[in-house]
Length: 139
Image 1 (spheres, rainbow, N blue to C red):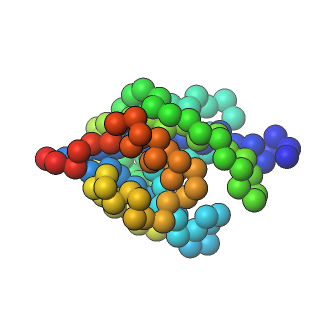
Image 2 (cartoon, rainbow, N blue to C red; image 1 turned 135 degrees about the vertical axis):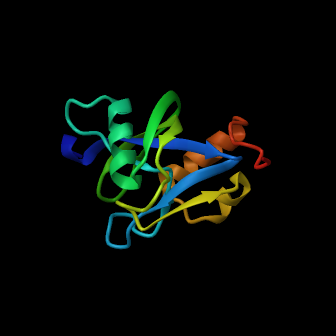
């Protein structure tokens, strides 16, 4: 694979009232229709945290404070190879809405396994559960 096919991607782990925020990719996009932790591709010269702040504003219309990096996973898709960095995020302003995605949803942690997650996001969800980092789902 060429460097253009290797992507650094960020994702936000946003939790509110015991629920986890997910975004569904648009049908025509790569991996269209699949659910994921919201985020996107890092642009040249951008830090991972700057990328996540920009992506969540563009995709969901929210301002966030980016916290610690929880996990990272590499995954090879048919069209590219990604390294996906998952960061904790705290909503600072705005209510998530689907500006650059098909749908947003707050889900119980126990529902993550029932959703059609993108493969790299499925690995992150499993690792979060194994590490005990998912909220209990109780308010």
